[in-house]
Image 1: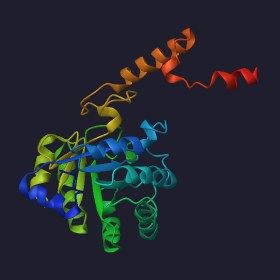
Image 2: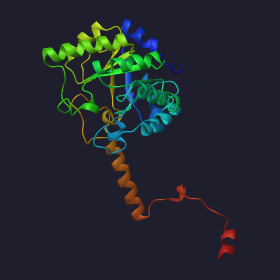
Image 3: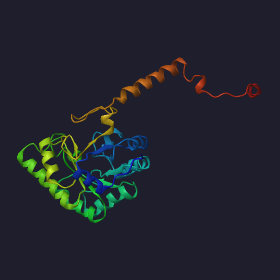
Image 4: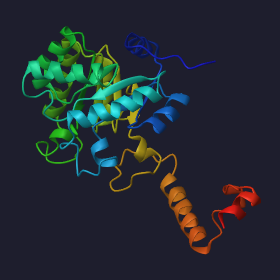
Length: 278
């Protein structure tokens, strides 16, 4: 049976049914093809590409052009998977008009089905403006990497009563503004469970415990392709970097020894043609 592309309304139905949502990141055509063949329903083309693909120290340097550039091949590769385009830092913070314009680019130029943006109460008017403009929005609260320096670094958020209450309020207000889902990143599992129970839209956890309506991981982290920094909440399901390194070294050794390319990897020509060349 072929995979059916999930719709945004279906995600809410799944929450009501207790069916978990599976989401991973992808940033190019080959990995999008693989995800599309899998049982994963949602792809986030995240600004985490700044670190795992472009080699930046964080997500802040990522530009709109870079996001559009990476969303396009993912859309071409994963035709049966819901594609979420991440809005990079300062693409939605300047004005409502700029936010709508940039979100529109991710959908119109990139081909994303919807967008994601980070932030709590300050982002409520932005979410409402985007939704009113016909752009579906996935919200993101807790640890928000784009503003991690403001939060004191990459730390668990919402551990004390005031912070937890604020986060619960943010989730409720973002739902009221029209967000169709909320990513909860690096928050205590009991708080994530409470937020999940209090809102009517799906919660997607990353370092937020098992009681969220779904989960998301960075593909490069979970398959062991990127190990410069691996968060505590990541589980490695493979270690492909070791396989790739083994293959590269085997290739290098065979080239040096002359055992590659062998006859089966080479092309021939007729002897009489070769003689005439000599």
